Image 1 (cartoon, rainbow over the protein chains, first blue to last red):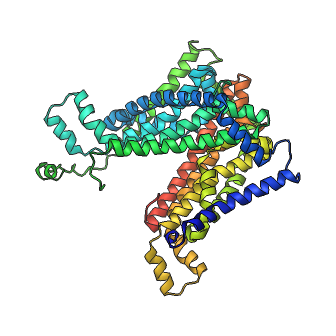
Image 2: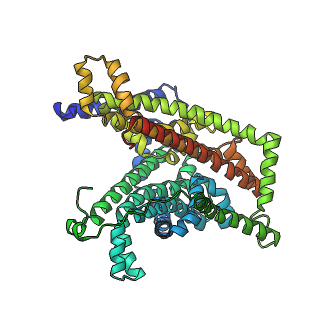
Image 3: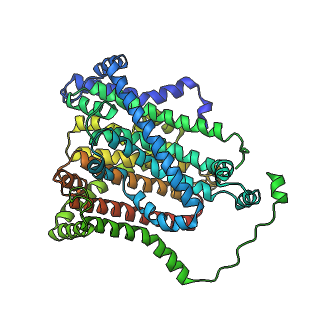
Length: 259
Length: 275
């Protein structure tokens, strides 16, 4: 809007004013001892420490482990979620039977499942990946069910007229028909899974990963590692959003623009 | 597409259904069949000793424990602490979110000044903030209130800003024609026109606040409903743990239902769409 009516440099300066002010306050605080020096590192120390983290192999292996759990959990959770969601959307009987139970289970905050999962699945990798899969399951189930319900019933009649087999119907009609809703689900699920990956490290046993790395950094009063990892978490989250949007344009090319 | 539309036969509209209460009741009963069946199987598995007490205590034991902790006041003591934490954190976060979101929605300059900082705060999720805040604030009450406030703040500020943005400029023009003051524009035009998206933001904020409360109480607390659940886990009192899971789930569910109901009423009253 009004951003066009003024030079870009000014816009940039306005955007930077607040971060610079906060940094200056932080710097002054640690210089003059307003902030507890034991927990608050000086901004310069956090910056140099963070740059050091860029070249430390440990910080990247942790990320690697976290991304690996994310990928496995996402895959498992979305496969099961899409399967159940299609059944919910396509079969009225299945929907009536299991819909209320699944909807009630969805309401339980995801982290509430952790104590129970730790008893049934232990506290190792299996439990962590299962937790991520659970976080992915609910949004994928919802979007799959919604996607199937949104398919025009006339297409179903066409499929019946052509006597498509179950498999053909899934491949030719259900999947492409539900795709717009599924992509929306993927976007939510990617982020949920990312939160679950980090949170799982806090509650299950310590193993290489971003969450464990951060808890360890907290115990060692390493604010530089904490800030660096937080930025990594934020950037990866943004990356997932981009990824989902890219997927949307790629997969939905066939669809006419106007909705 | 169009060609298909032309040749496709008209889909017959379903004949107007007679009101059949029995059918409705039957449908509801079908939905109850699964949980009842699960409960029955669970109870039977315990009765036949198919699963160990330490893996899955019987439902009647869970129920008994729930009644016990309710009667002894233990549940209410912890629950009230949790509810106060959520309420205080939510009020702080939502107030800040409403104020900043409104400022950013109304003024281009405020938006340009706060946007980069806000993005930085918003893209790092609550679980990312937790360890740093634990380092800086310790694990006392300040940590819990701050993290819950942050959780509530993010959806509220974004929804308020976008809600103000989507008010049609024509409405504001009308205000200008009537020579409304800034305050009048806010009070008479912006607030009613953005009520629904803002309410949706508040609902998301409260839901996130509740989830965050459970996380932070599980991680760093010695009282509260989340703590009670983890405590049950540590003592292998799974009946207590399951009872607390049920309480947490039920409260989250009721909270969400009430707010969704409120949203639907607002929608009927003011129209427009949620974002």
